[in-house]
Length: 114
Image 1: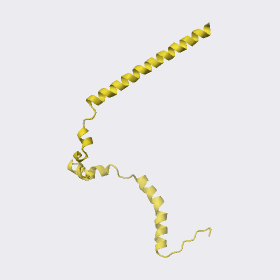
Image 2: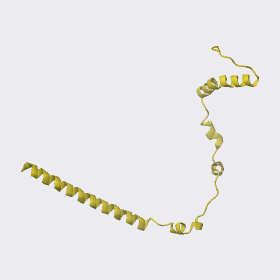
Image 3: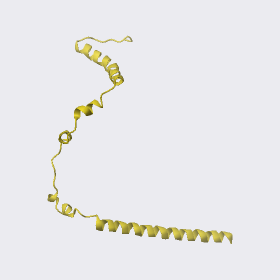
Image 4: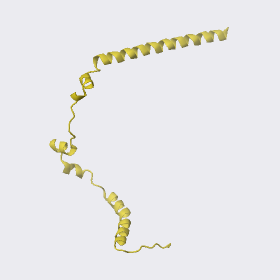
């Protein structure tokens, strides 16, 4: 008898969950329909007539910023590299630049292992 009661409770819970799912689904569909009624399809003219779409030429962002009074000198000062970054760049690039200069002068570079 006890197992029959558990089965009945499980069936009732399943029926209740199906009911809740159905109500949520109906509300979701109603919400979507209302949204399209009040907000959707406002640009229907552009969809029906592709010639009605107005294309603007590309805009240079630097020009727009200059027109708005943006000061590039002040901004570039905020992003100056630190001394540590400059030293790291020198450390990594100096050997490559020395080798490139030596090769351009016709020097044959040999390494100790050769």
